[in-house]
Length: 129
Image 1 (cartoon, rainbow, N blue to C red):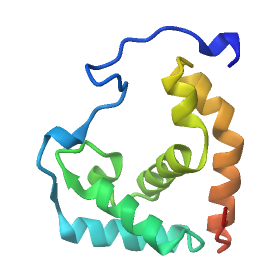
Image 2 (image 1 turned 90 degrees about the horizontal axis):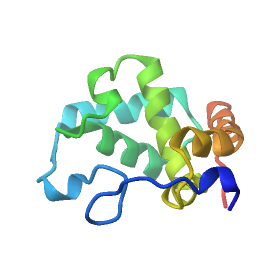
Image 3 (image 1 turned 30 degrees about the vertical axis):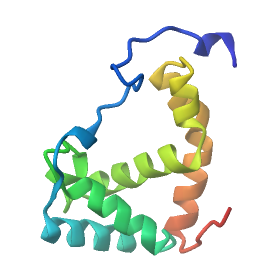
Image 4 (image 1 turned 60 degrees about the vertical axis):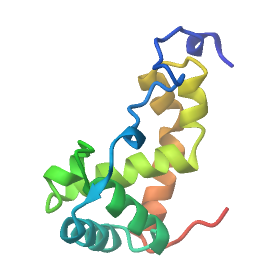
C-alpha cells in the first residue's frame, strides 16, 4: 500500500467508515425505483440488467439520502448513481479506502477504470469479468 494511503481515519463501532443503512428498516419507493432503473438503462444501455435494478433499488430506499432520489429526472444524478456503483463494485476503491487511503485519493486511483466501464456501458457494451 502506498504511503499516501496509510493515513488514519476514525471508523464507526463496526469498523466501517461508511454509513450503515442496515440498522434501519428499508422502505423502497417502487415508482421511483422503476423510474431510476429505466433512466439507467437509457443512459447506460450496456449496464447489466441486474446492476441497473440494484442501483435503482439502492437509490430509491427512503431515508437513504441517495442523490438520485432527489433528482431521478436529472441525467447527472443518474450518472452519479451509476458511477458510485461502478466505483464500489468494479474497482479496488473500498479496499483502498478501508486500508486508510483518503477518500479523494482512493477515487483518483480508480477513476480510470470507472470511466472505462461507464464509457462501455454508454456505448451499449457490457463488460464481463
